[in-house]
Length: 319
Image (cartoon, rainbow, N blue to C red; front, side, top):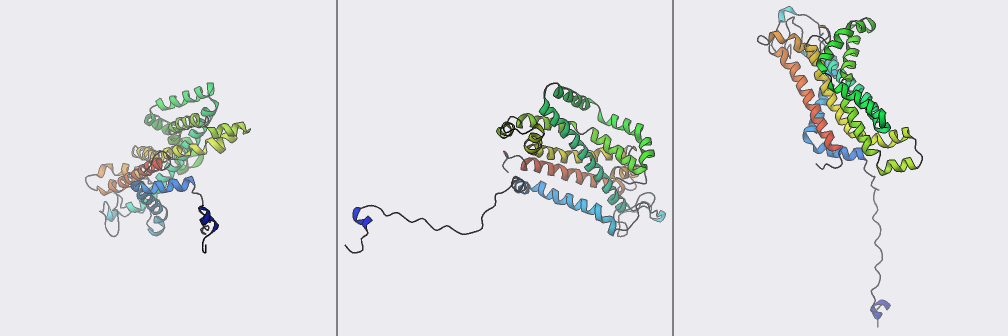
């Protein structure tokens, strides 16, 4: 019969030819950091806090370049002046411009927070890694030292150490550099313990995973297991702890400066400006308002960013 194929005559179904492949750009595999960034952007408070913090950092870095007013320029005719077009944040009891001092003080406060955070993370990761891999008496000894530091009252010890070592460091490195080194060492020296315990717990969990056992079976040395397999998978909680340490270090530096044991009066920090304006709250509330607001915004945004990073770096959490 005309028009019938052999398959139709026999009743069999003719095979369907495969569809032509759709040409297009090959999709690249998404990295873990790209997925974390997508989850971070879904956390609105953390995402906008990151932008606010970036603007604040940019302001304290490049603001003094455009706002060319000396931090110690005295204008006795403008003492305790309220915010105006000439002095955007007002002046203090010597007529010094508060905006210039807040911008300059932000550099020091943020630098102290970053340096103390880096020190705390480096020391904490090292001690936690050694304790998590060695176990036994090494782990017990390191955790005993960690618990000892956790049990010490931090603020009285901070005040005591700064009082004892302030003058020797001033003589060795100069006034500003010596005080900066001392404050960073003291604050960072009392912030590494939570990081160490966190890293130790992560190492205990990860060292028994299949990919680590496979690397061990293939002959990978202990340092290679730590640096290539265990430590990179422990960075999520460490990064979150680091953001919290920055906020804590800024508050600690502000507290020390407020108590008069931080930087000298001619080196403004946010805490020092608050300390200087404590007796003028009735006459010039702006003196303490703006540095206090800067501390509040910085710490609040960093805490929100830490919350967002905690959610973004946790693969079990879905936003």
